[in-house]
Length: 178
Ligand code: A4P
Ligand code: MG
Image (cartoon, rainbow, N blue to C red; front, top):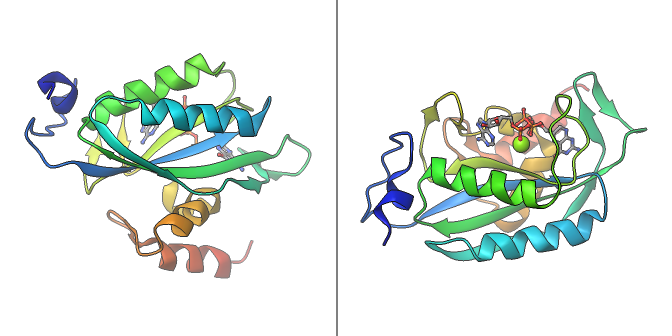
């Protein structure tokens, strides 16, 4: 076991001999061949070190959410969620996710801009963490239908740390006036 990969760069304190945890990765794409990119990204996730299992939901088509709200004229997203069984520390996993995004042509221009691939770390076991590079759980996950819906399809009983069962979060989102 690599101590550095399990311990992280920023003191995120995953003990080197810690049991594997389930990490939740949200995947989104709204440019290029979205499906092919997502399939390739899932293969990349399967090849990560200290990671033994990757399960993903069937991708769903979603309307682009922009800083000014949902935009039906923007390219639509394919969104899915992958569950990784991993011993990688959160900060190390995030660095791998950003490397995979870059290899699939991700460019950062405007906030919430169109992208070939976005990989967000939604949760890492029950870790709660706030650092300049990484917040866990992902600060907007509880409000995101396009995260909670695919996640609930592969793990209906999942809990978002600090927010509660994702089934209840989804119900609340759908009952909220839009
Ligand atoms: N960062 C901090 N915490 C995390 C985390 N838990 N996971 C930092 C990933 N990154 C995290 O991210 C910006 C910075 O957040 C990074 O430098 C990282 O260190 P980014 O990937 O460069 O940019 P982003 O994804 O545009 O930012 P953000 O604010 O995370 O975006 P959101 O909130 O995820 O929204 N509409 C649909 N239908 N489907 C989508 O998937 N996605 C977005 C992005 C907007 N609209 C969408 C979708
Ligand atoms: Mg992102």
